[in-house]
Length: 145
Image (tube, rainbow, N blue to C red; front, side, top):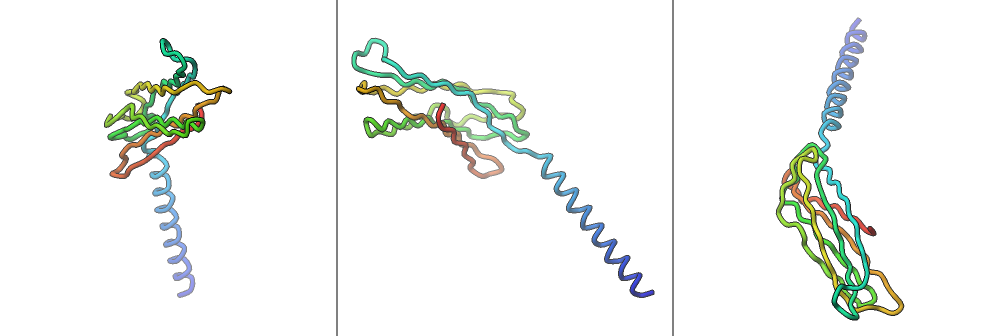
């Protein structure tokens, strides 16, 4: 009789622990946090009115489709020009807050000018988005547009 009480007691504790873990897991899944979305286009060609120069342009937009606000958002475009052995960083958005659910989007534009190369070479672009979420710095990096 004592062993049956002990068995049911242990079974009840395990069931309760399972429910607590299950509810905690469900609650964690319901809160997605910040989810940065972006749309970026880049072009590369002869620079207008500048002979012997080439222009690399990056146009884009970022927004937050998550459930939490992204605070102090910074967007940086990083141009890597291996032909000229240069890395150029341009901060195009600085200190913007993005509310949840895509309520606001921020557009940006960055340009990098360089001397023409023969044969033609391309410049790699990286988009880096930094923001504060729950007091921690988060980063999203996207390569090759």
